[in-house]
Length: 193
Ligand code: ITT
Image (tube, rainbow, N blue to C red; front, side, top):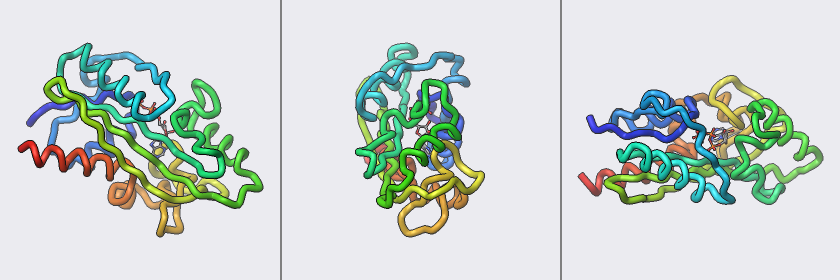
């Protein structure tokens, strides 16, 4: 099976992506590849940060790889936390701290519309390609559920009345931002084969 390095240190993402790629590739995380670096994400867009991660690993390994940058964009907060999703409440903030800050900023805000966005940067044979996926929904009034990671306890996808953390990976894998971005990458792989 063809190997593909996933340029990420987020084990939750790797778990979801392996399920979504359905064993099409042997996905190797950075840790499994013996690469112990925290790639900086200094840019203002998900696209630039995704490129930064995959290009860093490609330059280091010269192997096919991909990365993804994701963020939660809240309409009433002008797209915050966006690219800062992982470090919204501070550089080393936990998911609970990020969620608490988001709820605080949304106190007394009735427009709860939000979307998750994933941008994938794939480098194959030295060429970069990008894929994107968006999942619309809304921000709950309080965290619920134990599944998933990050903002999942606060995000209610459109058409549902439970959070991603309550719905679990089975439902999330059908409708998520990550699912849509991976589906688009899969279309590309199908065209190539
Ligand atoms: P890598 O850069 O190593 O891949 P990361 O956690 O730093 O891992 P990002 O820079 O893409 O990843 O940060 C995205 C943050 O957005 C992530 O830490 C979560 O807080 C949140 N996030 C992304 N996808 C999510 C999802 O599917 N469900 C809930 N929260 C998510």
